Amino acid sequence: MRFPGHSASTASPPMSGRGTAAQRPLSDLLNCLEAGPSRPELIRLLSQDIGLVDRELAKIAGVDTDLIGRDDPPTAERLDDLGDIVALLIREAEFDPHSIVGWLRSRNRTLDWQRPLEVLRLEGYLRLVDAVDALLAKRGMELGMKPSRLKRWSSTTRT
Image 1 (spheres, rainbow, N blue to C red):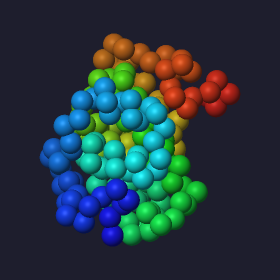
Image 2 (cartoon, rainbow, N blue to C red; image 1 turned 30 degrees about the horizontal axis):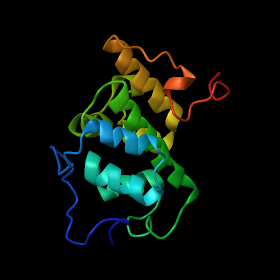
Image 3 (cartoon, one colour; image 1 turned 90 degrees about the vertical axis):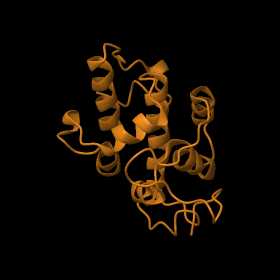
Image 4 (cartoon, helix red, strand yellow; image 1 turned 180 degrees about the vertical axis):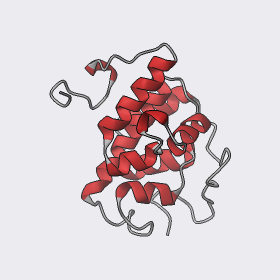
């Protein structure tokens, strides 16, 4: 079973390489992500426009691939977090879908050589925001953790 919004003939992108991410302009993709899409629309954006595969999205949500379209488990909020991280990578690091998928799937020194997708699933949003901040600092564009720059960030969240 596919996620909502997928057609049965749409194949998932491969786990490596460029996949089949759509060539939507990044500004349009960012606008869609920042508009707070419904969960089915977010899943479609992450899958079809960014290039993540159903198995990765289901793992983030903490459900079997065939259940994610029918249930809204408590851990599905991680998909919203993933959407925020993707928007942050587009907006601040100017990553394209291929770079986003590569960064999310690759081991990261800042995350003690863990993959960002696994860290999001196991430890949560804030640890990944710290890794993006480190990435930006390395590139000379430190985020500075300003609440206005992060969609779901609040000054009471971080100590």
